[in-house]
Image (cartoon, rainbow, N blue to C red; front, side):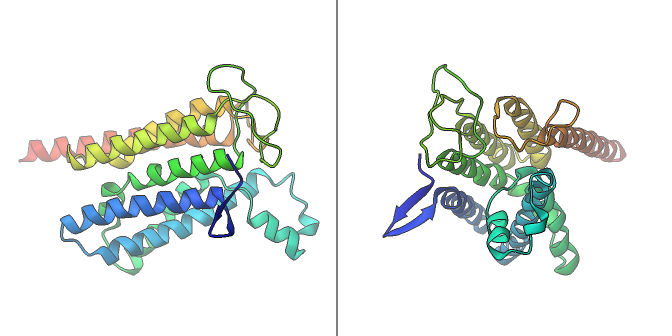
Amino acid sequence: MCVYTDILGFSIPSYGLMIVTGVIIANIISLFLHRKNSMDSYDLIIVEAYCLLGGFIGAKSLYLFISRDSIDWNMIGDPEYFSMLMNSGFVFYGGLIGGLLFALIPYKLHKIDVMYFLRRYAFMAPLAHGFGRIGCFCAGCCYGVPYDGPLAVVFPEDSFAIHGVKLFPVQIVEAAGLLLIAIIVLFITIKLKSGYSIEIYLLLYAVLRFILENYRYDKERGIYLGLSTSQWIGIVMVSVAVISLFLRRKKTDKKMVLH
């Protein structure tokens, strides 16, 4: 585990490197599937670009909201402090919400069938996110609770995690769970021809994240009524996914009756 990775003499943040790796791998798989269907690859790139932009804005915005009490707002005009603030701290759920909201732009502006892309390529989100969690492990952010059991990890002094203490490897557990979710979503989309990929993804990840939040030990949790911000958002996500499944299923059954 290392905060920076040396490549050709350059020190690159491991967190960013792993996210880029995940996005590249997700895109390679997506472009292969996309060309197999003789669809316009430019539409996929346009939708993804808007989603990534919305994801970045949403992830940073939610982080700033959760961390608002610890931010020195009097220093916000200082370039060095502002740069440090912008380069540290993101909340995935904020990115997910932001990405979905920004997906409306290509639908309105470019008349692209956005839902087709979101449903067919939903696996890209957990795949890239899984690599991002490996990046978290390398950097030491989003670390786990003190733990003296199997697979316990001790982070070095230059890590963002508390060092010299055995911790639960929550980042790696979540990364493994996310990669498994990506495989499941890809399987039901390609092999089972299911149109419920988004709902399945939201359900599986919300449950995974809700459980693993109990094993997180980093300070910025945003606790409200005993639950973290991510747990509250997870409850909303599960509700939205279940309602969507019910309504879409009901709509499908009604069409079958009419025919």
